[in-house]
Length: 212
Image (cartoon, rainbow, N blue to C red; front, side, top):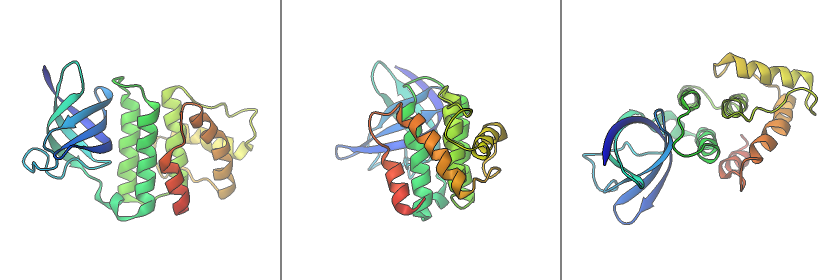
């Protein structure tokens, strides 16, 4: 059994039995992995308040042939402001669900890790923006090799230009899509995402219900 340290973002948590939790994690070094935190619901010493959705952690893990075991966790940030507003929660959940659903297991993607971390950091500092959510989606598709064609599609030249700039900017908050361009961007981005999903995104339905 190999022990190692890894930097991770918590994508999803499931309670398991009376005391344990199973975490789906996106790690800098190994990509998406799952791990069991034994006694996490009772042990304050090893995990404290670290195992929370969207949290950025430094983890010590033990890996063998099956699921990893989480031994301890130090908090980088739990992004507390995200948890104060439904639209922030929905935006963070959307990003984490996309990463969980679209990435292969145990395949490192450091550029995607940085994109997700920067988006969560931005959501923690600034009001949630529909433009930033499209910014995240188009850059995620680009990093994963699923970038949609911008020429010869149903979207306008203005929307195509904004999406192109979003893939070159590298900074959340730098691109603002007018309402008409947001709708057009969805005509391109949502089908490109849905092509790689076996069921609809729960987080997107939640966001739409919140008006985001």
